[in-house]
Length: 340
Image 1: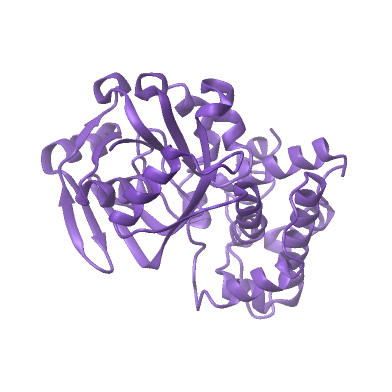
Image 2 (image 1 turned 30 degrees about the horizontal axis):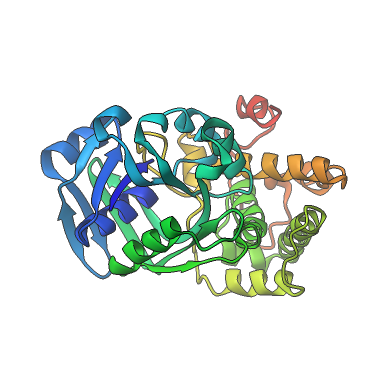
């Protein structure tokens, strides 16, 4: 099976390498130093279970990769439109494009470019990043993918792709309703990514402060209500579930699979370190997606008053000192980006 990867950073690079090592024909869309290193040395993977190298086709021109049986689409949400414009040369009539991104509207954006019949929805649970050009590092035991057709059917193409993932020893399942899985993760990430970014705190410290713990739970609950208004019913105890899961991440943990790569495979990291380097945050795409959904579902806007009244440098510290720097204060240049 020939599989293309658009966004060959931490997530796409790791899965592409694992698939290639199991015998799939893989073609990566990459650029810059990352592309040059892959061409010269192969794509190197450092993982908790094994380190390995794969030599695969890689290019910044999709036409040089050519038509694929499936495409893994793993760019950051804010790059979806730009990257989706590259897909044409990778497509056959039956090609499925599997979005492994965070958010609930990426599939719609991709469908606007290539047609809804080509799009597969999916989620990934993994912590991976580009350690240096040509090297992807994966840490932790989580390496899970859930995906499916948007209509829930068990088509031949999803069955074939499922077999390829499992052959590569990637924990993978098909979803009967992928929208439920997308919204379930979305509710969690809106709370986890949004609040760890705005407070500059790891999740264990954030949950130790009663005010931010309460806010975490309220965000999960609010997004679950928006999901319900969109016709997607999540489990009744989702707030308790996600709070417990976040607590089990351990001391100083950073959110798993919040970040992916840019269209050509740029580096990825946590929200607070990205912000400190001036890198655009994927968390903005998550919050904008949530607000669009509230408007379309008739619920009005997500409540922003509490965050607006209590920005990160004024949170009750209780012995903690969230960092106040030029990237988070309201008088910085980043404010303009947040108001778009």
